[in-house]
View: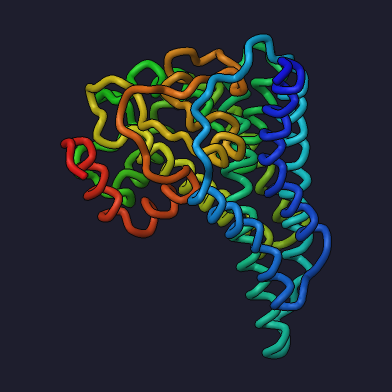
Length: 333
């Protein structure tokens, strides 16, 4: 295959990252929807999870000399879509009604769809590109990354991730690595608190600026769209952050003090939806490497499913994940 054609093939693959934010925008810009239509709008999420479960393996390295601008354009598109989705979500929620039983059923269905779509979208299409952008050298890209993190009330991640997690990955000082035998729920409570404390201790000015921006965003949503929209905004942020920390949980599970830095994942769907994040060990070796140039690791334990499936497993059946992962680390089946 000619180099130019292969480069465009990779770029078209990463366009998969736009499916959820565009679906969310289409859903949120209309409505409120009849209950069955609202639930039907969540179908792309379930289809992506199914595709991730059955995803083909993609381990080959990207071609050399990829042009950067098409991949940077995807980051900018995601950076524009997320704020649009946040305010479209608030508008839709503000238009719901709680009158008779039919209206209550319709409202609950719409809120359920909002939670499923925006919780997933805000992780894959806001936190994932933010994770890429906060490592960039250009100031405008880092600021765009922080703006995206503010939409999930997690701006302090920009400080704790770069200055603590990358320096101490799989070590005792890394709050984003699970302890031996730790459940996901315990890990989530611990890491959420410790990452904020670490950001405050490492860069109080940046942490305070981020907290101020988040407070202003909360105030704007509450003032413009009402208390229910404010509640749903916080809820989608919590859902997105829990997905992020589920990824942190399984990425580094059982690797304290060990090399490589992360579990191997070769799911093509995960690679494209999460903007190269499954090639996490290479990212830890070369934090400034653009997502489209990351390489799949050949060493270390391998995940048996993609990121969407593993996150759901960790959140809902953590003991099953731990048992299988520990057996794999011990050389079992």
